Image (tube, rainbow, N blue to C red; front, side, top):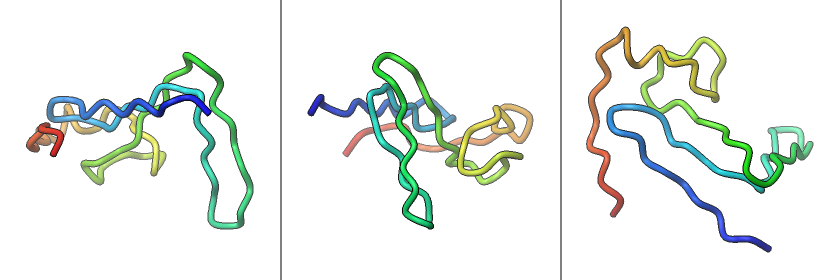
Length: 68
């Protein structure tokens, strides 16, 4: 299995670079192929949660982007 890379974007989303598998609440798996990028919302304003739609820009979202 390949390592999962998660990028904490400055005042923005969490960006995952495939390959990864996303499992929904019903247990259905969705595969993100190698090299494809998927971004998850962390501002709470996305119109397509849990995915990022860029609403953080208009909302002025600010958050620490340090990896701990």
